[in-house]
Image 1 (tube, rainbow, N blue to C red):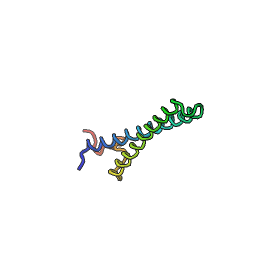
Image 2: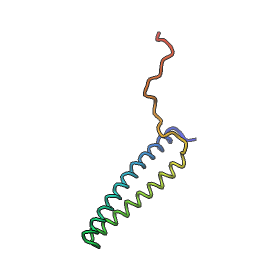
Image 3: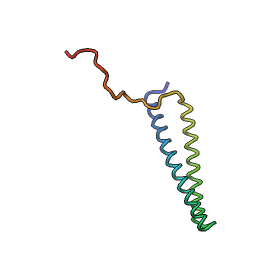
Image 4: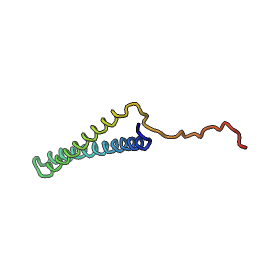
Length: 97
């Protein structure tokens, strides 16, 4: 059985992977736009090939992050996503002495 600390670390890891997936998707999109723009202006130029290389790197990172996220989510399919204390204070059942 996993300890509470292990569970908190796995929740943090999932959150971080989701953030990184968003970052890599944005980077892949920007490098794709850069590669298309450079290829449109000067096909076969060094700038175009550098943009394509960065696009490949970001696409590979995005793919690996998606695979890791899918594996992590498959390990914990039925657990709630957030374990926070309720925002309202609990009602006291006993009067103060």
